[in-house]
Figure 1 (spheres, rainbow, N blue to C red):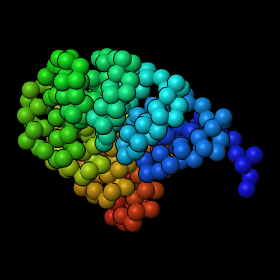
Figure 2 (figure 1 turned 120 degrees about the vertical axis):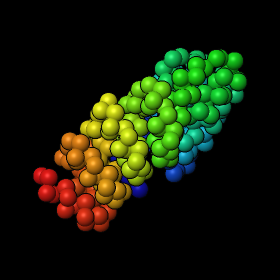
Figure 3 (figure 1 turned 45 degrees about the vertical axis):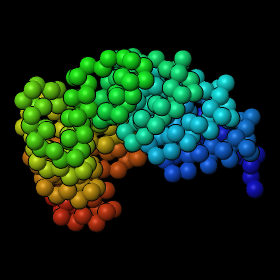
Length: 261
């Protein structure tokens, strides 16, 4: 109805490429209807490579329709390697279609390890015959153990001297993930190291207490507050632990957070 007024900016195309649910469909629509206005920038390709649910589909579409415009930079490979949900599938696609352009740097390996992507590390090892140090597999195991609440593995790796606060590409730490998924015992273990930043914010501006409050993990909220978590940190949209707890109906957490303000 008002197509002439719709400006297809880099941010619009980037958002479409990163859309988890309808990324392929939205990109296809933009290419069909406004192809001349769709510029495939590095930011767009990175968003596609890092798309957790639709990354392979979006990247395949971009390669099929606009392959000459798709540049496989180090940042793109890092985004694929650090894709927590579909990294192996996206990396396999890049190796199959553009293998000569895929360069495995230390940053790429770190991106995979700090996102728990053991599958990507194994893929690099087998497909490219690149020896991956055991320390990177250990780091991936640590990250996955924090998400899963695997207290035994966390204890073992901490005793072995693993650095407990390494962040992934989204600036999310093992503590952040453990708090998000309600892994109380792991949260306590990580806090007891006194080597983790309780207020470290992700790229989206969310600290560990944000998702604990949003998801109703009352005991984790209490524990984080006792360890000096800041309940007032707002994310990129202005939301705070208090506001998301209220939105989601976690009244007990709302009361606790209000008492801290």
